[in-house]
View: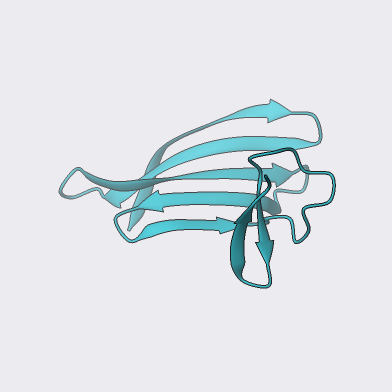
Length: 82
């Protein structure tokens, strides 16, 4: 897989970037990846949408302080705040 078409926008304390992923030889864009990185380019949160499904990293591990509709990780189980 190769990535391309990346762009980003600076945010306070980090950077948001969106990248397309796919096979450059066939012009097949298999999905997208959104990253939020800190000032040292460490990925804090990531969301990948592609033909293999949805992958998320950096999800909160508690619903404390989250608003209704927010997603959080409860020991490997995806939950939505009601």
